Length: 422
Image (cartoon, rainbow, N blue to C red; front, side, top):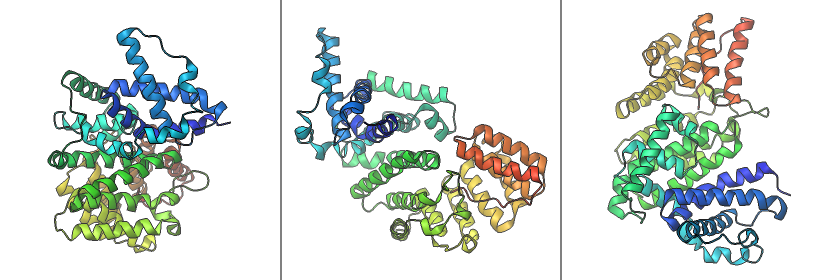
């Protein structure tokens, strides 16, 4: 017997590859999505009794392709669907399935699909939103949160992108080398957002780590295509340095452990070494970019054997460079943490107060602001900020972490330092 939780996790993990292969086959977004959904329903019906297939991705592609073809036949020729047994009973075909599916081809379908979704005929915001929905399978809420916009606005972006593709078909063939280079920045941003979604959800959903693993795999493929691009080196380095800490980010009770309190013995040494090596290699090109600078910040944390050894002044300077390369209220918010460590909470609070209107819907803004206010002894204002953060929390673990600050307020204990949210 296979439980529903395992099936849900398996379907989530298989979705990018299976959907990408189905899109290559049907060359129509809605048809591919419907085929995958139908295959998922058949998996939910079949796997608990028959057990999971040896290759869940291949099974979903095979069944999804059959379902999609039969659906098209029914729509076009009014031909009845085959019997359920013909689609669901794969006992006789599973052994040879992999050979018939051309595994070498579908293995890299996701990277191909990323370049297709990031076609220049679509506006940049629609490119990335569509890719996050189609490739990563993120919900509207997750994508909207990544862009700091409302769900309705994000749904409209994705709908417009699909409508534009339907009205003026975007080529589904692999782009040539020149086209790949033109779309490289958008593809890199897409991978960064996929990784960031997995990273931000990782403390609440262990399966989210699969998004990080997939983003890292695709970044490796991207670096193989563009081995001399320092920004792709920086992107992969950033992912490795961040993901190296995943085992230390939650305790046994599932509660968030902030960077300063993490057991650094749990950090993955091999990932850290590879990430630091890539950062150094990228910076030698003397062409600084946003991913290289972020990776350099992560490398500063990785160098510190203990939290007290962290060079917060260097991190502050790196964030100042990042503010020049990519002006953003979120970048300034992150810099404020470094400023609070090196110059105190008052300087950090002065830095983020002008961001209040733009980041009012952002969980981390209110959490950081509450921590700074608490250090400065402004208990009532800190409580209001923490309550706002709890209302915006994306997971129970995030809400529980903020409640710890409220508990300290209630007990009138000493204010905790602002910790780096990494």
